[in-house]
Amino acid sequence: MRKMTAALAAAGAFALMVTTAQSAAADGHGRGWYGVWADGVNVRDINEGNCATSPSTSNCPSVIGQINSWDEVLVYCQIPGQTVGGNPYWVMVSPRGWDKYGIISSYYVENNSNWIDGVPGPNGCSI
Image (cartoon, rainbow, N blue to C red; front, side, top):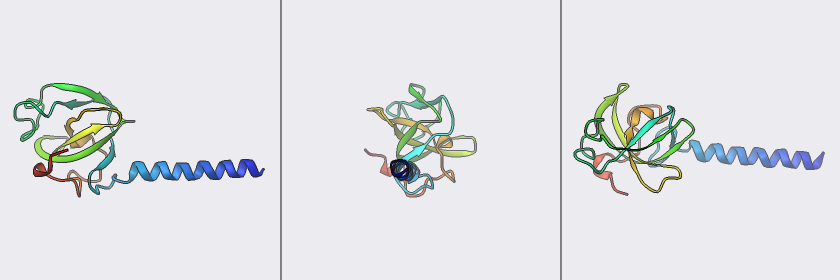
């Protein structure tokens, strides 16, 4: 019984630690890890044409990969651009496990509002 109680306590502590780490930025509190709520979200190449200053599907045509609802992205900055689903912002991200970064519509990022509080705007887009 003691072993089972200790195991349950350890598992509960681990779950609390994981939940806290994953949701630390969910309410928009700066650069950090955010969840993605959709599957097949295109991560686009931010280094082409006008993508870095005016992101849109036409200004950022090259897709460097896709992410899904179980993925998390490290959000660096946000830039106004083409409105997607009522959200006019795009975010420069690095998906967990990737060694590169790109840009996605902020519409797909789990956050309580369109603008992610504490995440730098276009002038703060440097890694």
